[in-house]
Image 1 (tube, one colour):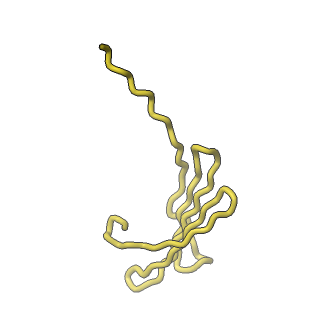
Image 2 (cartoon, helix red, strand yellow):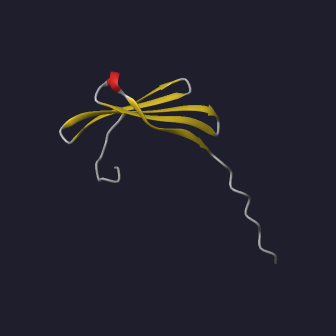
Image 3 (tube, helix red, strand yellow):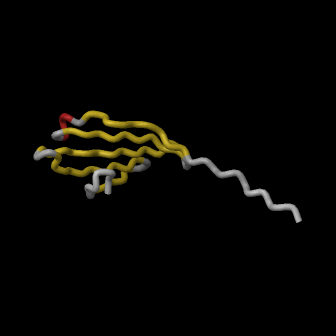
Length: 80
C-alpha cells in the first residue's frame, strides 16, 4: 500500500543477483507500468532503480540509489 492508499501488486523474477518486479496500474484513466530492479553488489549492499512509463518502450528512471546494511554497535552492559 502506498501513501495514497493504493495497493499495487507486482510480479517478480530472480536472475542471479538481480531481482526485478513489474506491475501495471491505472492512474487518472491511463495505464502506468512500474518496474523495480534490485541488483545485489555484496552481501550487505544493493543498487536499485525504479522505472515508470506508459509502455515497456517508454520507461524512464523515476528513482535510483544504493542501500547498504550497517551493523548496530554492540550494546554496553550496565555496571554492577
